[in-house]
Image (cartoon, rainbow, N blue to C red; front, side, top):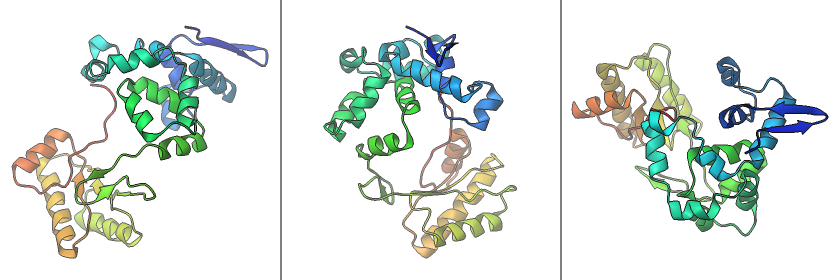
Length: 252
């Protein structure tokens, strides 16, 4: 596994796979604050070059969080289809990219190998793709899901309406809901990130969303993205919930 490259006469050396992954990202303020971003555009390109030449087995053997320390990592790795993984483990990340973009690669093909991939492999190939690459690759993957509405149908797109409010003021929240719906947003979900994570506050907002959706017969589903345990407690106390989900990081 080679973690260095030379560009325009300058050698770039990286200490770990995770350093390469971090520095191969497009520039983000969060990465800069976390001190994992590339120091320059040149270092970013170098990281992408190094990442493109790593094999999928390199990534499998170097998860973002060690297997022994993280339950999420253990679940992902334990559920990898090893027969599928064995067929692709020697592919370089660059080869996975080329395969995804190949005109002969279909939705079926991508789904077939997906259970042999880990999160690190998927993240790696995305980091070396352009925006156009991502559009072309994602367009091949058909994933449809249905709650009150169906999303993921080819030729369509769905949006989440996120009516956040700095104090969880219900009137302010509903003003944002109505404004968003007037623009055609919210068919995927009306999903609020709450300031107050208490069960009572979550219940209050869920009831308001549900009453509004039923009154106007809006074909969508709703959620309040409090901690999952809080959402479950609200449901146990009778709060109507369209979806239970939460924006979480990829580790325990």
